[in-house]
Image (cartoon, rainbow, N blue to C red):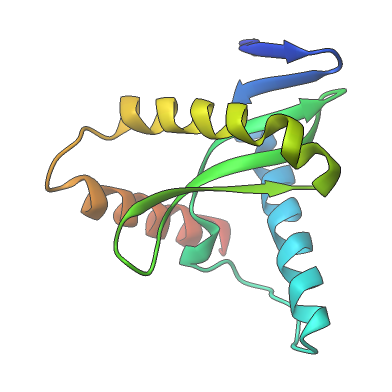
Length: 132
């Protein structure tokens, strides 16, 4: 059973469930490949640590249209990154999506010295599993 958190007309902001992970990976690869094609670089096949740890999704008619993931930025700080299928929704939903992801992150990863290490480890394990 999916837990409805917020409802913005036809949109639902929810926790990420395993059943949505394939759609999240597809959305990530699509967005990365769009950026790479502009730079005339080959498309991405394998996920990297830049994928992050997805924590929340935005659904429209049960389809993933955006997600938020915890990543480790170049300054070794936790950051929430949002990927949208259609940038038109970013302005309307980004703040709520980030807030939901931060809440999920804070529940899963206690504040402290080990937080960054645990997040990095979780991302690496997820990427390894998804790249099999």
